[in-house]
Amino acid sequence: MLPFPINPVLKDLPVYQPGRPIEEVARELGLPAESIIKMASNENPLGPSRLALKAMRETLPKLNLYPDGSAFYLKQKLAAKLSLTPANLILGNGSNEVIELLGHLVLDYPESGTQHPASSSESASPITHHATRPEVIVSQYCFAVYPIVTALFGAELIEIPAKNFGHDLDAMLAAITPETRLIFVANPNNPTGTIVSNEQLSDFINAVPENILLALDEAYIEFMDSPLDLLPTIRAGQEKNLLLMRTFSKIYGLAGLRIGYGIGNPELITELEKIRQPFNINALAQAAALAALDDTAHVEKTRRVNSRGLKFLARAFRKLGLEFVKSAANFILVKVGDGQSVFTKMQKTGVIARPMAGYGLPEWIRISVGTPKQNARALTALAEALGKS
Image (tube, one colour):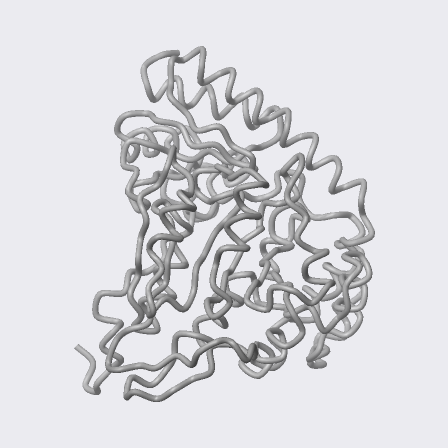
């Protein structure tokens, strides 16, 4: 026990459990690290863009200098690519940091009846707090960081039962109360890979009251075939309560550099910039992301490899008689009975998958899409673990 008082919300706050690193598994099993494949954390199996690697090498001699605190060039290029202005963008140390910034923005309120304006709209009434906790609405089987951030700020988590492993948007709307401050929707959803239709999502966005912040997590949007394009809404200055969250970790293969971003109305971004720590995006991350934006060939190859991999895994699961959730992302959820046991058996063969008990899915594992050879090896390991080889 620590000899000084700590924040009481930490008492029951869970610790996020990431996928196991290759080096740790290699040491534990006594296997060479190069013989192990990691298909647990939805990483790009092709690695980073060659352009990104070159840019990082060129940046190494200047690491004695602080990075550009405003990421000027990266914001300029990213804004141009999205046909936005830099004022529409907030950069984070991974999209996880952007999620935490939202907590600071709308959840860290005093609880003494203080009034806070709900919106710049004249028609919006102020929010009044009377010793009640702000509420955050999420879907069952949501990304683990949403509940962690909610708990960190002492807010109330409202978890809406999933519909076919995905979001029940109508039920989420029905759950809104005067205390609702923030709603998270991930499309595609992690860890289930599900999506909602463009029509449903558009209707949902229009139905969310303007005094509630809607965070739409689009970390896997580049893997979708026909996603709803909400950038015109951002360009038009509409939906001041909407923030889109994206990342360089997935399609661009830069997960190890931790760089994500939010897209929103300039007024919203200005408030988030007040909270953001200086120099939160390191120099290597800025250089790599800047170069990766030019490597469209790498992005398209990643999409092709992922699409073929999803089809391969789905066919293999059907042959094994396994239930799985159709995925629009770069991973797939499959029901294996005892998820922890299957994960352990696969790991002993040098294949790291992701057990899902922590997400309330103890009978399932999640397998990230790899290269064709990795996918085949993962299926062999899975069949052996299930006694179906």
